[in-house]
Image (cartoon, rainbow, N blue to C red; front, side):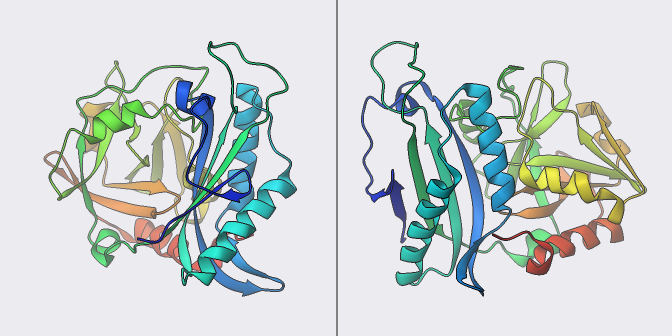
Length: 289
C-alpha cells in the first residue's frame, strides 16, 4: 500500500526517541478525507479542513502546545498531497499529528518548545455499499472508557481505551464497539460518535467527562433540523437502547452509517436517516478547502 510521511516538512518515517509524543502521548491528531478536485488554483481538497484546523488549534491551547502558524500547516498539507497525486493517489486519508516536540526526561516542559508536525497520507478504501444501505452491526465493549474532564473532547495521542476495546473482538461481522461509562451510560464508539432516533427526534450522548466531539458529530448537530424536528443531547442508558427506532454512527471517514443491530436489538432505517446519510455522501454538501 502506498503511504507517505512528512515530518516537519521533510519526507521521512523517523522521529526522535526523545519526542514527547512517543514518551507521554503528549500531542494531538486529526484524521481527514481528501480528494483530487480542481478548483481554481487548488487541486487537492480536504474535507472540513477548516473545522479540523480549528479543533486542533483549540486543543493545542488547552494542552499549552505551541500551535504552528496556519500557513506552515497549509504548505505541509499541499506538499504531501501533491506527492500523493504524483504517485497516482487521487483520493485518500490525511492524518495530522502535532506533538509538543523533543524534550528531556521528566513531565515538565519548556514553554518555548518547537512542536513536531507530522502529516501522513494513505489511499482511501471505499466502504461496501451495504454499510450505508443495510447498516452495520455493533456490540458493547467490556472495557470502560476513561473519565477525565481535562481531556474530554480532545483527540489526544493517548488512545489506549480504544486500542484495548478494539482487541475484544475478531468477528468480521462486528463493525464497531460501543463504550459505556461506570454509570452504564452510552458514550461513543471506539472510532465513532453515536446517534439514536425516536420518531422525528434525534438523540446523542452528552460528552462531559468522556469522549471526543467529532467533526461529523459537530456537523450533524449544526444541521439536524434539516432532517429531524427535535434534538436532545442527554444521558442515554445502555438499558434504553430498545426505546429507539434507529441508530447511526459518525466519523470523518464514514460520514454517517446506520446501525442495523447492537447486541440482540435490531433497528430500522427510516426516511429521515436515509436522507441524512445520502446528504453527506454527496461531495456537494461537504466543506472543502
